[in-house]
Length: 382
Image 1: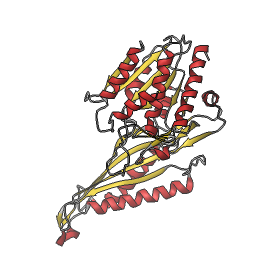
Image 2: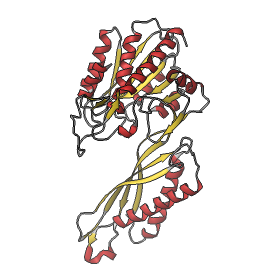
Image 3: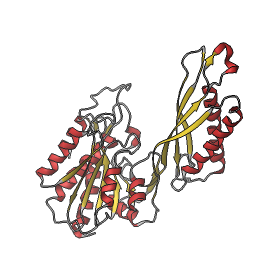
Image 4: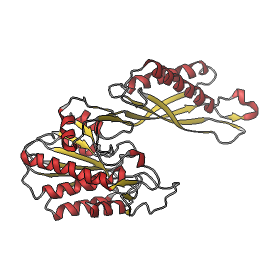
C-alpha cells in the first residue's frame, strides 16, 4: 500500500488539471494482477473515472468509492513538498494523503489482494474525478452501474472520518445570480440603475431567509450547524468608480439537510428577486435578477439502524456513528442507485485541504485492517 500511495501523491491531480496519468497508473497496477478496469473519459478527454470488479458478476457487490482530485496548494505555506510523500515520525505528508489518496491506496491494495482469493461477493473499486468541485465526475460511474444487470449491494465512501461510520452529510447546490441594471455616468447616478445595489438588496434577502431557516428549521442536531445554510461566497460587478454598474454577479450556495429540498429555498429566493425588480421595471424594463443553478449533489441520510451501518462498524470494531460537515458522492450513490451507503475512511478532515497535509500511519494501518475484514467477509459470502 505504501508504494501505491507514494505514486498517487506524486501525480499532481488538482481538480483543474488532468488525472489521466494517475488513472493509467492505476489501470496498469490492476492489469498486472489480472484485474480488468474500465476508464470513462469526460468530454474533454483530459479526465477519467475508473472502475474495476474482482469476483463474480452475478451477485451484488461492495463498492469502495474514492476520488483522485485534490485541492490546490497555491497560496499555502508548505514546508514539505506537496506532491511527494514525506515521512516524519508517525506521519506521512503530502497533498491528498488524508483527502483522500490514503484510502484510494488502501482500496487498490485490497483489490490486488482480492485477485488472489476466491470471492463469493465481488469488490468494486470506483475512482472519480472532480469531487472537490462539486462531485461532478462520479456521475458517469453511477450511470454505468445503473445499467449493470446486478446492482451493487452497498457502498463505502472512503472520505476521512478517522474510521468511524458517518451516516449523513448535507447536500449542496451552487447558484449564480445575475443582476442586470442600466449603466450610466456616476454624476447622474439616480438616472441609471446600479446592478451592484440590486445585488446588495438580493444579498439582504438571502440573509433574511437564512435567519428564518435558522429560527424555524428543519433541524438535525447531529450537525454542529443543525439547519440548512445559505452563503454568499463571491460578488463581482462594476467597471470603475465613476460608472454606474450595468451588471453584477453573485456566487452562492445552499447546504441542505438530507430531506430538505433546496428547491423550496430557491423558489423563495426567486420570489424575493422578483419583489426587488418588479417596482423598477416601469423606469428600467431591463431590470432583472436571474438565478442560475450551476451544479449540485444530494445529502446523505442513512438510518442509524440500517444494516450497512452495523456492517461497517463490524469491520472497524467501532461502536459510534456520526454525521460530517463536508459533502461526498455518497448521497449520489444512495439516491440514484438506491445503495445503502456509509462514509468511512482514514484520517481526519481537519488535516485535509491544509498546508503540510498529513495522515497518521496508524490510520492507514487501521484502514488496511478494515478492508482485510471486508475481504474476508466477501470471501465467506458475508
